[in-house]
Length: 486
Image (tube, rainbow, N blue to C red; front, side, top):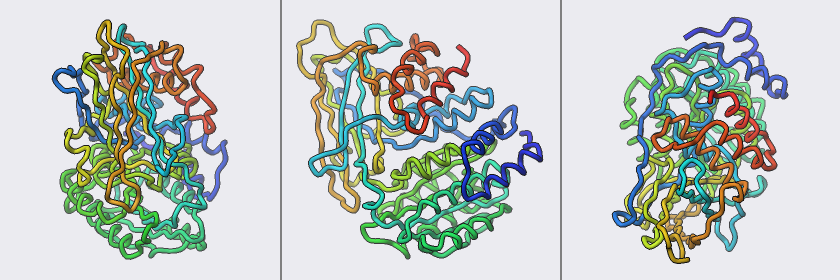
């Protein structure tokens, strides 16, 4: 892997040490693209394959956990901006969809989740249909979100020494400090050959003290990730806020190599800790030795979410524009679709391959599932085949279960999915954009189910469905699609 030219590395470090930055600085970081012509193929991903079509006569019920991650999309963007196609195992289409926020209705009737659905024609396979499922977490004003007890868990091992890793994380964490309220608390735990507490839990009215601690961070040594995780949980537990926002935010390239370091061992570790009311967000950074497989699984099993940080604009998305996601309004959120066998011949869930659940898991409140943050939207798509000459009845039932924060009993929601479809061109902006994103994922995965999906099809789908696009993420997606080869 080629190193950054010295002047670019120096510029990046200078930018990362600033408390604030403007659009011009962000654009400079986008131009850097780490200065690499190609990524070393030592990054680790897990290939979960693809969901196949299932006949409803064989299995009419489909059950899976929500997935609030967005890392796969940002990581794919990194590959494309470097002129490369991502490894197919790096593409998780559900994370493409859930990178974006959709215009779904707010919850009502004392619920913290709303659900909706829509059916339209499938543009990449004739005579097939797409069924969209939408979910939204309650948008809570910042002043009403409970006080936070954050622990920054930061990898400072030798592999984190490049500017696009530790320096980028330092910039992000300082952005988050700026967003803190005086009654929020932050502690900082670091790990290399062993774990250390750099900063005991400190209230947000001491921002300069917290930033000074962040500025001290430097890299060197091996990577005792398990020890760091244990220390972070200990600090979080010691400062636990009942009914508060208790969360560990782990920043790493995932290159764990000291002590318990396999994905299985680390997953077991966070599974032991997840029932104590502390959530886990995992932030992946860097290239070459990125262990995407491990970090994605740690987040999934640790009551949390996984994001990839590739540039300054992504820092703003995670730490400022969508900071409500750091407060979960729903946990152990599950979806179950009961298809009408008189209407639906077969179906295929697009993505969510590693989030499937057994049918009985849906009503079992001891089974772990996904979390949804304040104001966050979750989207899932099924490709379905409808029988000829079917009666005008429902396609099926959309059942949803979740737990409110600080409760252990799930709440059911249910929606009948009407057997009424539109052409894709007449569908909602939500449907058109989701379909375009899914088609992009099919192309990036070189899916056997991609049918006639193409660059031109995607651009046509999203051109008039960008919506308000307050922060420009949909516009950036259009530019990303435009940059790929046909």
